[in-house]
Image 1 (cartoon, helix red, strand yellow):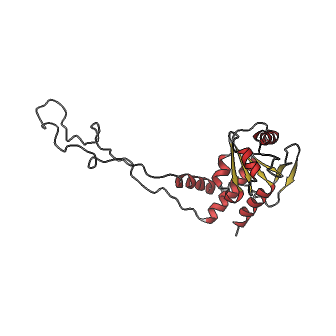
Image 2: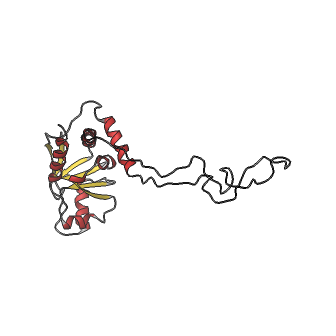
Length: 212
């Protein structure tokens, strides 16, 4: 897989071959990618939504009026679901949404996500994510040179130096992540990813380490 590699200042670039980059020729891993993304989103749910049934709401259990003779529809007590402030029928209750995904599926989904993002041209490598001083303007200049037209951007490095972290944190639409903590959901969510050379090596080591 060939990726565009920029210099640290973003001024020049060249195509470089990354032999260890995962490559797919068919739909292998697509289903795994979908399932892992669903699991990531499900595991982020708190599951604390709760409603009260007719047995739990406050109110009298007395019948509102007699069964016959009133000329209106027969009614039960005030706590029935169709009454105002009544209980909720089949409402949500606290539950655990956690989904377990095995290691092989996670690894396959991660590799497929990397392949899809690189194949779409959304993965860019930069020699190093660094600036001379902690100035947002300086770092924004580098980003504009690498991605003239950008939306949300994910920056990935092995570890961010102080100046880079301070310079990038206030730029709208820019998120930073360390390569060792990169998830499949991160790769899927961001259409534009800029990764340092150290970061890409760490990511490829993780991706190839899962093939056993």
